[in-house]
Length: 486
Image: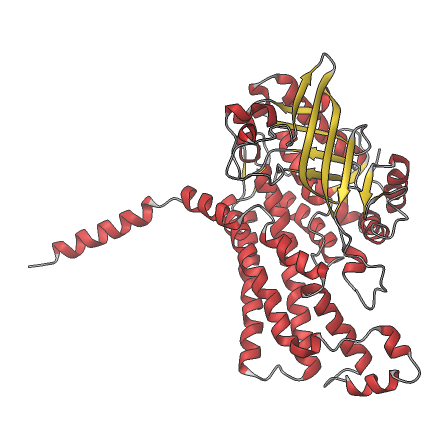
């Protein structure tokens, strides 16, 4: 099969009839439901873009000779990494980086897992073969994936086996000749109801012990598997016009609780089964975290470019760009952008082949970027709010402008330095939807916790950072100073 089109993506969702619930009801057709239909159209556009920009978005499969998505590419050179990143960037630009779980994120993960699969063979060679086969299956069929990493927040002070209800978290129930049966709850699947399959993996941050082996699982199954339910949170797409809600009306991905009610998983779809040690090491030893971080940093560069564009447009619209404190805030965004670009450049140009023959970016650069951006993104949104000030409150709707009586009033009253009232309010509604609406608030929260608790991640970063070089530098410096004394 070849890379799919937008129409094929929608057709698959209709036929799959995934078991999705939202607002207290089961969804009969996600492609027509108000909470999902608009983001599904945005997702469909991503797939159509692959054909509109074939030279950037598609390549010839090494297995079948068909055209497949570049975001699945197994890179063997720095040029391949850049080619993949350029495809990632094309997708990110369609949403201003506001779709954090566009398909390329997990496409990079299954590639890394599939090519660097030896860790899974520690338990059984079958699991390593499964990982490689799944990567090829996902690539050849252009499978869209959601994923789930974390257990319910019942009592974070205890491990899963210590919980009062130890069976609430997803766990292994039974091993059968043809597969396994799992049961329990997992959090938090972004795009849960609007993708083809779900990838279940352990957390990248919270490590498990041997007593948590029943919870140590990794597998992939279709989203319409019997017993699998997606319970979506309230939608932040309120069915409003794109003019009024330019982001939330198009890019509201949704997040879902995932319920597994004695779900059967065939052996060929299992990668880890009851081995906490393998689960703890999977993301790092397959280099999946590196390739996922590469996608994230590329996406966040686009997102920062989008924020900067909004900020500069607001400054120009109301004539505040000559003030020092305004320019300084613009500088903050610019410095963030250029820092992220530098991290990405270093990551790509210092890339090396790993043991599987995969060209792998320099993780030191990516790890710094992925730890820093969650801390700085809330500041970027704060800058937009400061620049907009009361203008982010005075944002009537398009219907107000079209009203015969009040339209002319607000056209005149809300004009800007270089924009008519209609155009200025449209810009400020974009800034509001990016920062202050439910959608915008979710974006800030989402970026802050993208890879997990930033404090816990920071502790891991601090622990893993090579410190002796710097301590020895000071020791040697002080010794040198002592030798100079009379």
